[in-house]
Image (cartoon, rainbow, N blue to C red; front, side, top):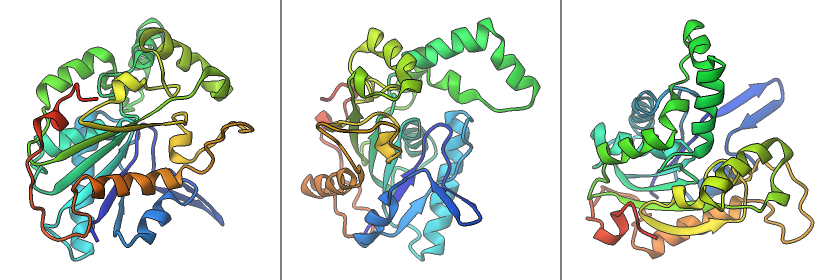
Length: 277
C-alpha cells in the first residue's frame, strides 16, 4: 500500500509522552485508522512556528528518512496536510524537488490565500504591541505568522505554482458561530466578516485548492479530532471516518493507492487550477 504522510500545521507536533500520558496532533486514532488500511504511516515533526521554507525543508528530510527506514526509498507517497502544513507541502513539492516523490497532496483547511486572522495578529500583536520584535529578541522563530497573512500568501501562490505531475486536492471546514469553542469566537468573527464561512481560523474560500473534495462540518481543532464543544444536534462526532472516506475518494478519482513507483500522472488543468471549485 502507498505510504501516507500526515503533516501537522502551526503549533503542531507528532507525539508527546509524559509518563502514561500520550498526546498526538492527530487525535482519536486518525493515524491508527489509516495504518489499519495497510498504509505505512509517516508522521511529520517540524518546527511548530517557523516559516514555510524552514518547515518544508524539515518535512522533506522526514519523508526521505522514513522512506529509507521503511525500505521504500524512491516510492511515491500521499501527503495529507492540515492547516499551514499544506503550504509547507506545496513549497516542498515545487521548490525542493519532491514532485516525483509525491503522488498526491490533500490539504485540510489550509489557508492557501492566507487568513485574515493572521493579518489581525500581525497588525495588533506584532506591530502595535511589538510582539514580533520581542520574539526575535528572545531568539524565537515565529516567521509563520507573517507567512500566513493574505499578502504573503498572494505572493506565495505566484512563486509556488502547482507541479504538473502531482494531484492536488483540498478539504474545507466550516461551523456556525454557535458551534465554535468560546476561545475561538474572536478569530471566527474576524474571518467571517472578511471571507464568510470558516472553521474559526480558515475560510472555505481560502482553503479551496486543486480539486475541492468537500466541506467538513468541523472547526479547525475538530478537524484533527480535538473536540472542545459538546454536540447535541447534527453531531459530527469522531472525525476519523472522514479521513477514511477521503482515501476512498482519492482511489475513486484514479490515485493509485496500492503503492509502487510513482507513475507521475499529469494533472488535468481543471484540477491544478488555484480557482478550482
